[in-house]
Length: 227
Image (cartoon, rainbow, N blue to C red; front, side):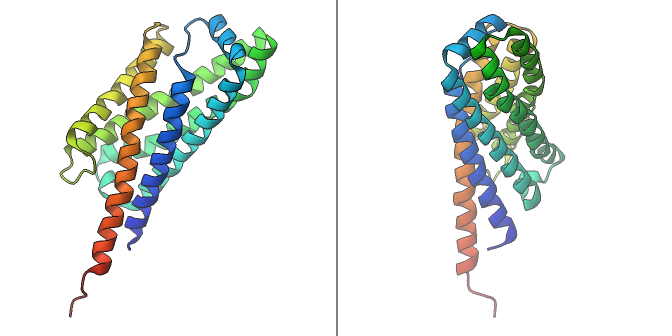
C-alpha cells in the first residue's frame, strides 16, 4: 500500500465522519432567526439542544480540517489542479474559523441567552456571526471539490450526485449571504437544507474514497511482481 493510498483512505474516513456529524447537527440546529431577540429566546428555550448541537458541530468542523490537511499531503488527483488545490486549502481555514463560532455559541452565547444577559449576548453574537462566515468559505470549497468529481473520468461518485452536491454548495453559500448578510428570512432555510444535501454527498464521497483506495491497494498488493 502506497503513502497516497493510506492518505486518501484516511482523508475519506475523516470526511465521512465529519459530514455525518454536521448533517445531524444541522437538522437539530435549524434556521437562524433574522431577529436577534427571537434567536436569543429560541436558544434559551432549547438550551441543552443548542449546546449539544454546537459541541457536535465543533467536532465535525475539526474533523473536516483533519480530512483536508491529509488530502493536501496525499499528492492525488484531488489536488492536481490549482482550483482543487485551492479548495482543499480553503477548507481548513473555513472550518477553523467556524469552530470558533461553534464553541462561542455552546458557551458564552448559551449562558447569556439562558441568563437573559442581552448585552453579552449581542456582543458575542456579533463575534460569532463574523467568524461563522468561514462556513460560507467551506460551502464554496465543497462546491469546487464536488464539481471536480463531476468532471473527473475516475470520479468515485456518479456524475449526477456530484453535480447536485456542487449545486448544493453554491446554494448553501447563497443562503448564507441572503440570510446572514442581507437579513432575509428565507435565506436561512435555504442554507440549512442545501448544507444537509451537501453533507449527504460528502458522506458518500468520503466512504467511496475509502472503498476505492482500499480496492486499488489490494489490486497492487495481489499483482504478480515483474520477473
